[in-house]
Each structure stands twice: as structure tokens, then as C-alpha cells.
Image (cartoon, rainbow, N blue to C red; front, side, top):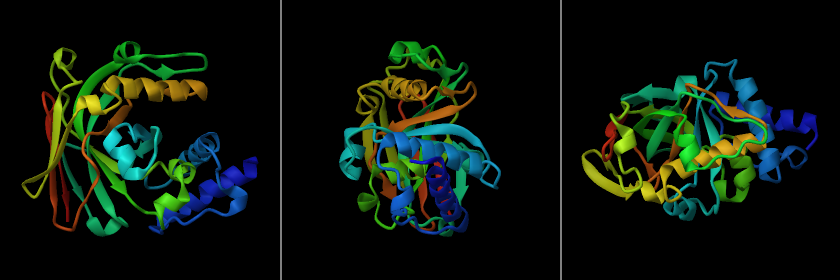
Length: 264
């Protein structure tokens, strides 16, 4: 893609985000055709949107890290997006349902970094990235199907637009997370008190830290960094659940506690 086409695509996605408009197929002249082009558009979108009420990037999300989510979305590999400052809440989240096109929730394991990860030429495995993790917590990712037809748009356009991300609720940091068996930790979700799904940490690329390593290596391949202080949503152990106005969502991750999101 030409630089002007990358910026045009980012501007279109920004306008849709700011105006609450549905994302339809981008014009052929500025449509990303692969993941390399998609992340270039995403970079420019983040530059543009940081100066709006959405604010700067404060965290990252990894989509399609579990078989259940890959099957649900029909995508065979992880995809990365970012979380913006105004959309991240702590412990007990409150959201206005009408502000979304088709809002859903996911049950996640999240981490916070106390050292940067990435940089050109670096390569990480699960053990290496865990040394940069200072907190592990339960989290709810808020997703928004703001697309005319996400399956026909294809992964590159979805990645360019942060892959459904619309915010999150981060739970309190779990104590002594290093001693937890994250691989076998069970996570569950309830909506209005009824359990709607459960899974375990192994579902996230066989260990949650494998997902973090994947993201760190993606950033390394692009000469970029995950910054100290940022958080990362590692993936959902429960298939996306779509919520209605008035719903209350609760999630729990074994050993890490939980979080709540209410949609008024």
C-alpha cells in the first residue's frame, strides 16, 4: 500500500469510530490485503485517534488465541489490537448499551508489564515474557461488532480496526500469581446470574504466556515495543456473548478473582 492509501484507510476507520457508523468494505484503493498492511493502517489509526476523546493506547488485546474463538470467527491465527484509555475500566465497569452497534463480552486472562517487550531482532518464549509480567488479573473484554459483515470484510480490515475491541474491565491483580497453575485455571462467565460458558487457561494457546510471547514477537518483527505499564488481554476462554440493555456480566478466573460489567 502507498502511504497515502494507508492514511486514507485509517481516516475512514477513524470517522466510523467517532461517528458510531458501521464499517463496510473499504475502497479497493486503500483496502489492506494482508496482515502486514493491516498493522500499518492500525498504527496510523492509533496516531489519529489518540488526539480524540478516545485517548491514547494504554493496553493491547489478542484475538483468536483459543480454538473456541477461532471457530467462532473462522480465523486460524491470533490477531492483535489495542485498547484506548477512555475505554478501560477497573473492577466494576458501567457501559451505555446504545453507544455500541452490537456489543459483546469475553472472559479473559490479562497481564500488566513492568518492563518493555519487543524491539527489532528480539525473540521470546513463554518463560522469557513472564519475567516482564508484574500483575496477572481476570478481565472482561468489551467487543463491538461494528461491521456490515465481518466475515466478508476479512481479517486484514478487522485487524486494521483493532479487531472488534471496544474496551475492557480489569479485575484486581491476583496475589502470588507465579504460584498459580494458569494453564489449568478455570474461567467462567455469568450473565444476570446464569452461567453462560467456561474454559481454562490451556485454551489460550496451551498456556496464557504463549499468547504474550506471540504478541511480543509480533511487535519485535515490526521493530516496535510493548511498553512498561501497559496491560495485555491474552484471549477469551469463553465464546463471545452478546448482551442486551440492562444485562450484568460477571466473570471469574480461578486464583485471580473476577470483574463485572453492567450495561445500562
